[in-house]
Image 1 (cartoon, rainbow, N blue to C red):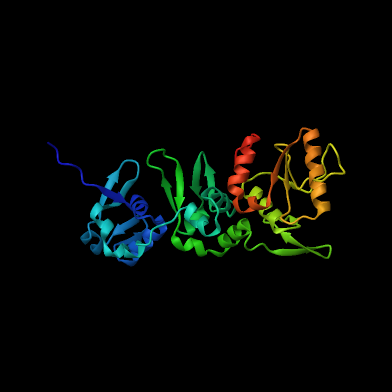
Image 2: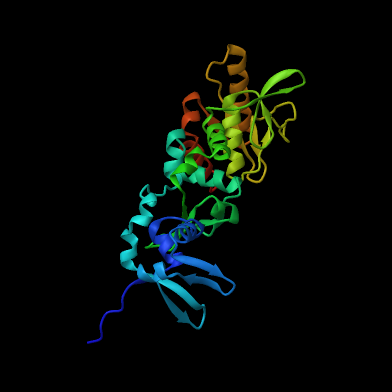
Amino acid sequence: MAAERETVYSRSSLAQKLGVSLKQLTRTLIEAGWITQHDSGWKLTAKGEFEGGRYRRSQKYGEYIVWPAAILTHKVFDTYATPAVGATALGKPFQLSGHTVNAALAELGWITPHLKGWKLTAAGVALGAAQREDAKTGIPYVSWPRDTATNEPLRQVLAQLAGTDVPCCEAGGAEQVCALDGHRLGSVEEARVDNWLYVHNIVHAYRRPLATDTAVQSDFFLPVYQVVIELWPPRGDAQILAAKLEKRELYRRRQLKFIELQADDFGRLDEVLNRELFKLGVEV
């Protein structure tokens, strides 16, 4: 019986196994003195050969370095002991779903949609992220270094989506709330809805007059789907509530598709908007 072939890892497969980026692994191997770069590519040092590295040749890739499976437990990789995290973990402190965090990461240009999953961009690779693939479905996803949670641009976007740190701006002498897409809105609740629509690539207008009745302004209008979104204020006076009820009746008479968001919906926009939009034929 032929002997079983030893499991070995190329640099890229070793990086995946360790949960780090190829760039981060290569830096570790260089600093450990195991490999060095030459014009023709990467070369093993005597130290690297001692640790089990060797060359392999293929018709497709030419000569490249492989490492034995035992290398995974080497102390040189102790700094990788803190596991990488996914989008769900990044969103947990902000009470945001992994789906919305991925949308935010795409807005930053760090990942891009690919079929049912996500692919890394060059910007994401530079941050130390690693491309992964679900073992059962083959759907691509991305894992991130744990310190990505402290990345300031990402923290700002997630805080705005969560409504915990929404910047103010002035328009015509009046203070308003600024959304990620530049819209100036009247409340933090409106900004949260605007930001959610923006990162999920849903084209929307703010306080747009209805085509059927230009005297009436919807809070948000989704022109591609002809859907209106109305926000009920947490503490509305009688006049505001009467106006909202009037608009609701108008939408029903005109047979317009509309969604109403109540005060307790703003803390769970992922759940509510995904569900209500899906009912109206909009898949996010």
